[in-house]
Length: 168
Image (cartoon, rainbow, N blue to C red):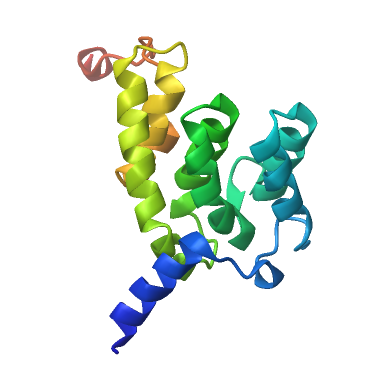
């Protein structure tokens, strides 16, 4: 078995079985994320969602091994939970950063493909969170730059000096 097929096989396994002892969150803990995921899977627990967000994404910019390990479960919840959709989208948007988890990201390929379909269906429903969902879709499509720099669809005005005026 070559390295590429080994990585693909481990990615399929990652979606089903996660060794949480190696999946630390932004605080270096390995035990809280699985507990919090179990809580939000049972019920929509706002406190658990808040803590999960703080543990999986640091400063809306950095992700950790636990972030990618949690992604398949978040995607499964995303069809019925805006918070799951938002957290999964934020993790994918941060995937372009220097996280050192490229192998874990590759292992999430199936979950990311499923998330893409879910986001596409959600956008077709003309939701209130259209713009945020559009940014998540850009990231899923690996358009990380555009996902990061687009602010909104309003026009901006910039004051610049006319080049002709400078020649006088």
